[in-house]
Amino acid sequence: MATFKIKNVLFFHEKKNVNVLDEGDRTIAKVMKVSNSGNEAGKTFVLERNGDQAVLGIQKGRLVFANYRFQIDGEEFILKDNAVNSLLYFCVDGTAFGKKLRIEENWDEEIEVKVDGRKAALMKPNTISLEATIVMDEEVAGDWMLFSLTCLMYFMFMIYKDETDIIESIFDGLEE
Image 1 (cartoon, helix red, strand yellow):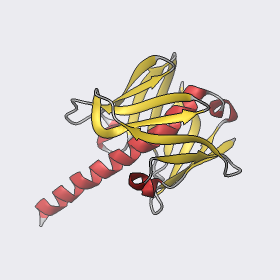
Image 2 (cartoon, one colour):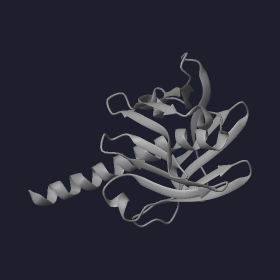
Image 3 (spheres, helix red, strand yellow):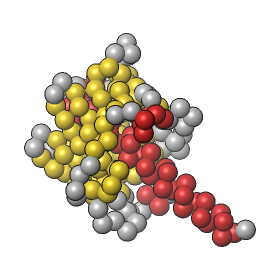
Image 4 (cartoon, one colour):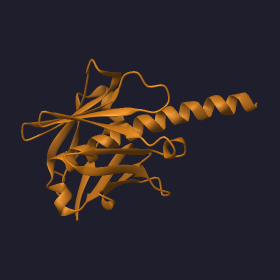
């Protein structure tokens, strides 16, 4: 298993990027917020590693459920909120390069990344520091598509959490 950390997310608005660190705390990739005309403002991120880039953002035009545009190696893939599960917890399904993907929150509020039905990675968000630890199979860590999607999906999860917190506070206010 390989372990990575996404650091300093709390200060993302003050910095141009956040780092992805390996087990030796060496920077191996960076994540930046970018704009993309087909995506919602402020909800697109790019991961850059060794000159390669992957982009993930929330497509414009959603009412309730999000479509996620994942762009890598000149290809674009659409992943979607699972219409049933996303009402209760973060759950995204899709296919990229022939691999069936599911990214979903478990009961421990961690994010499991499943490839063709097999758990391949686990993201452990720290809600206090807004950093995350990611544990991946060695094979997944070496797969550029899966590595970048896993790291970038953390930011989509944080957006989901922020938005559900807002909705919950509105409903809480109606009960008073």
